[in-house]
Length: 112
Length: 114
Image (cartoon, rainbow over all chains, first blue to last red; front, side, top):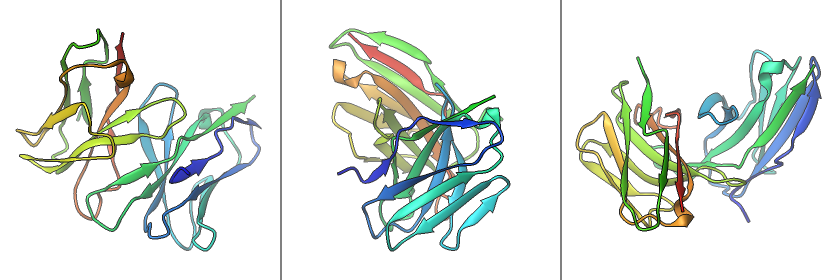
């Protein structure tokens, strides 16, 4: 079983619509959770951290469910520029040096 | 600021050849990382460094070596390339304790080993 699992998609979303997708993680000791965004043939970039109480950043909302060990990302009012692969990222342990476990990504395609 | 840069952007090697990938960052970051990304798989950590002169193995270190002689540079070496090392290699850096999870990535090096 992969440590971080994501639905690869693609999620085809009409412009202006809402899309949501989840990611599950296997390490119950994980403390930190993130969403990174990766455009086609580009490098990953941090989109947002995921906090226990859930958090929003503009049109993006992230949620954490520790009991079921999943995190989610919701994108409202989708823009064409939101087309990308979204990587679920979880820290692997309790050390502080940034050992991250990356999911393989969920592809989102926003169509006009 | 250029951020994180990687050299070269593309490379084709024959089995058994060697090469070095160079990563440079101008953000005065303490931590640096080398990842590989393969289709259908998440980024996997090859080696990392928590400071100048220090390196450590990640998840998939076999066949690779690294050096961090200067704080701003992190080199990844392939001594004897194999087709299984065909991949996209990303370098990343982060500030250090307390913000190690916000990693800044370079544009990647696409390596093909024939």
